[in-house]
Length: 362
Image 1: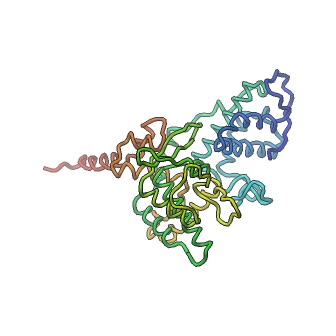
Image 2 (image 1 turned 30 degrees about the vertical axis):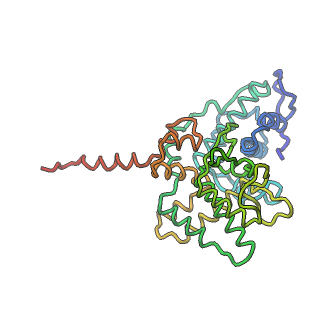
Image 3 (image 1 turned 180 degrees about the vertical axis):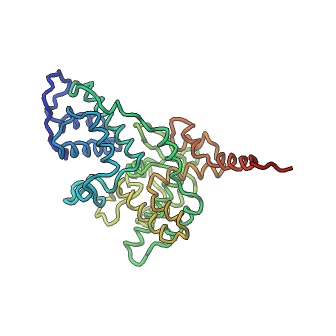
């Protein structure tokens, strides 16, 4: 729950009825109620800021540029760590902390972008008199160049598959956990879907047209699109459904989550996006333990769920799938976003550069 921090009365005519920062933020969040994944991200970022301000006995209206720069540094290294950082837990857990780890540079910039949108909204609503986040110098180009490296090469991916195959199966629960992990990685890798999309997916979102299976997804920005599902993926789904005691073939009215919790009683419950992240991190950790080289272990240690989306893009392009089709599969707004994953172009450029030498051959 957002702390009820009251603002100083600015005297401005407000277009919203909020009497406190918490109420103002909740009004902004209500604008995104039709997009659950976006709402969850926006709420998390707003809550972190409100908690930080409460710790400083400060309000949104008194936030200055210098404070925003302080907050940027805080996101990269929350201090004191024992107060702000802890194991990932549900929000209702008594030991919940706002962070599970310091944010990466890309995550810091994303947080500031979200908060800039919050301040823009409250400024337009007359609740605030300015937006100090607008003054920030953005680092988007540099972050984008770093972002494309967050993928698993063929060797790393092979160790991930070995880790999945080597999961313990000594009990019924372990078997269900192993089958779910295998299905989850298959789904993320073969579709390039975002974890929030997987968490929200139901079996009835799948449909067959002209003998081909499709997944209807509502993704980033509320954009709806269809993702093609290969025979290999549908075979993996049939295996996972059998492990749950369900018919192999999905029915049009089947509301079963595409990925389910383990141990739920009665109706199958969906695996949350946070839980999907934790399952993936567990598998990456298992793969790291069997990786033979320091470089490979470092990649697997850093890997997260979103790396699978980048890996899917890179491996589809390496397999010869046309750039336009990969862009459509991943639902990129621009084909240039997809082109960043075309590492074969970089390899060819590097190879060609070998001909440029200090000493030329006679």
